Amino acid sequence: MRKQNTHTNRLAAGQYLSEYIDICRNCNGSGIVNYRSNQGDGTIDTVRECLVCKGSGKVLIKKEIFVSINPIK
Ligand SMILES: [Zn+2]
Image (cartoon, rainbow, N blue to C red; front, side, top):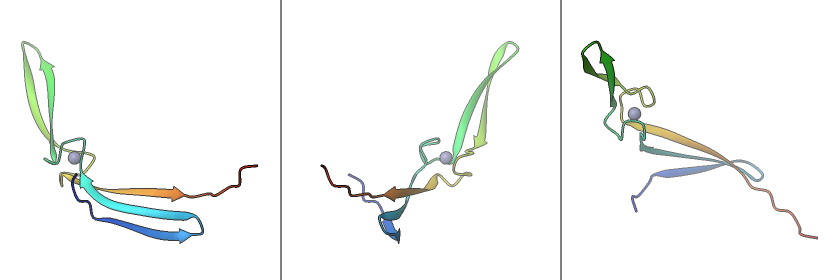
């Protein structure tokens, strides 16, 4: 299990914001994505900057968590 630098901030009663940096799943942390397209009689591989992480290979993941505690009747 990889250690993650997670910060959880309490926003309000029962409401939390969790933030952590993770490797971009779209490019597997490389920052670039290969696109293969058919051009006439062959295929052309194009390397482009990943649109999800903008080429950094990492993304900041934010999770808003709502906690509600209710009685069971
Ligand atoms: Zn990416």
